[in-house]
Image (cartoon, protein in one colour):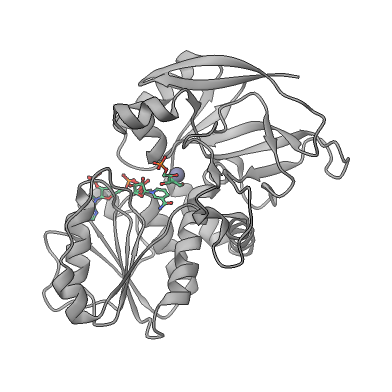
Length: 341
Ligand SMILES: NC(=O)C1=CN([C@@H]2O[C@H](COP(=O)(O)OP(=O)(O)OC[C@H]3O[C@@H](n4cnc5c(N)ncnc54)[C@H](OP(=O)(O)O)[C@@H]3O)[C@@H](O)[C@H]2O)C=CC1
Ligand SMILES: O=C(CO)[C@H](O)[C@H](O)COP(=O)(O)O
Ligand SMILES: [Zn+2]
């Protein structure tokens, strides 16, 4: 069958490619319905990844956060119209130690491999999770970002000591919001502190114990463990501030993506015996865990609604460009596309 794929060909320019894709596989065919823009997509759209990376990765369909409806299952296991969240990581091998999202051979959609901006997405039979009714389309569109937070918290649990009484999350944006919200739910008795730059953004974090401007942190404050959800140039300042405020032997979970290497105060990392570890993307187990978690906690889903900034009907390439531009112009929340292709 002929599939229309909406690819970024150069910064701010999309074109349609017509691909002849075989239906003689066990793949399930999904029609995307609601998609959400990630900071990583914007780095490709605006060209901030730099010429060398762009020349290797483009043309490429963007978007790795999204849901859809099954239109065809060759094995007749799933009825037409089944609502699913799509998993962007596509492993091509298994390893008994390394999880799928860290295998260098895995393909990740919208990072060198076509993302979800397509008329139909062909998914392996373990590359989706059926959605419960408790999660609406708009919120479900960015479940992938939730799975990244869930994955990082799971890794934190495996790598940290057991004193988990105070958490500091740096980054008053989408990922910081979701990570704080999940930690709040999982560690009910712990103190959860959010650290950011903008008072009106911090006001959204109504479920935390305290919100601090990074220019105004009490000197006596300490935290057991920290999560960095900043990325870019700001992550250097954030990481070094975490190192200053964290208690000895704490863990610092790094999630923000930086284009350039950042300088870290390793002397204090050594003196305090800190553990710094990175977390990137997620896999099937994280999607399953996250969907179950959201289904079991309707109050968490309710809080996620605060992250939906706008829902934009997309029918044409002009709509796609307008939606990406709109996303660049807002400073809070997620830009969702109602994908009518
Ligand atoms: N590891 C992974 O798999 C994933 C990583 N990411 C990455 O995580 C990062 C955050 O993503 P997202 O939340 O969507 O982006 P946002 O832009 O929504 O959030 C980042 C926030 O951090 C704030 N900030 C800047 N400097 C500091 C600082 N020193 N201390 C505290 N806060 C600061 C920013 O404020 P201001 O805008 O005013 O500068 C902004 O509000 C990005 O780099 C993104 O690419 C995202 C998804 C998955
Ligand atoms: O957003 C992400 C996962 O949700 C990752 O940060 C993103 O995949 C990084 O990819 P790239 O190297 O292409 O920026
Ligand atoms: Zn992302």
